[in-house]
Length: 130
Image (cartoon, rainbow, N blue to C red; front, side, top):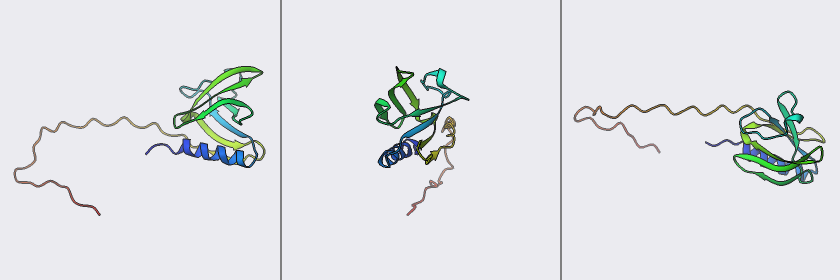
């Protein structure tokens, strides 16, 4: 199954906005593909205000969050892969969700070649499951 993280992020983002709060995300700034201004990273993390008033052209899809933001008044493009988002919360009351690290999907195991025919006269080991 695909990750539930992007769906939860979008739902919590909407919930925080509907309750007239400010959505912040916590990002692992050193994760692969993260593009944030490094001068604002502390302890490997950066906290980003993603409210409509703070960002321009916000896109939250199943792969990443990207937007244009301002850091010390300087327009800056930001790109955060979904796997790098560690949590989302409302600035005003801290309500939200922290996400566990998602393990990388293991590489598929190579399948052995099918050069061994079954026993003569044997039937397939398939059965009907209802």
